Image (cartoon, rainbow, N blue to C red; front, side):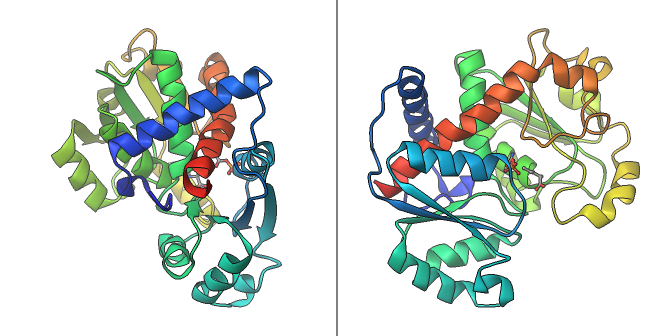
Length: 300
Ligand code: CP
Ligand code: NVA
């Protein structure tokens, strides 16, 4: 494994080995054990979109590993003025030991990896959010013990989160069901892959997806870059909410996850969000541990 660009590039073993290392790093941090796994290594962090969790967890993460993180906003980089990613990649590779990038097009991340010579980590594109899914899987395993026999249900937009969760769930042996309105399905090739490689359902019916679910996931109706579609999306997604009424058909010990930021009263009700706040914020913390594991795997 040279990069983390999207979940499809990873084997089940790659994913499990990141999760195992993440568990170990969490244990070490909780017990005051500090090891400089990446002493003196430099991570560049390019952001073309806003971020709270990804930015802070990567910056704290590389620091805790003994390295140094550089926050590179596209507002300040020449890439924001049109310098090609191919050139940016070759320049930054001469200074840095790894690059994390959050941007719009998946191709930009793939090109960064293709033209650069250091590991590239996808910190979110319109297509995928592989770092988030590692934290999600880590949290699910912490709460449920293993992935065996679990059903994950995703309610809402077939966006970057849905794409990546679908692959992560199927690769770890979970069943995956998504309920989304017409026109808001996940990537069609990924859905085909999921259907061929595991138990996958796509439905319009929220309760059908939630039936007997062990893990329920949702995300915003309008992702970053789609702010202009907010009103149209609010109409399309009416009813696609995770709430106490809809959750009645899920397992009694269902866990609810959200990558955050959350819009209470839209994709999730206030009541359900607060009822599951413990696991949701554990999930947010696990971004730190999971990404430290990814950096150690790629940059050591
Ligand atoms: N979940 C997530 O990636 O959060 P940020 O947008 O705050 O980084
Ligand atoms: N789907 C959301 C996820 C944010 C972490 C977005 O892309 O804005």
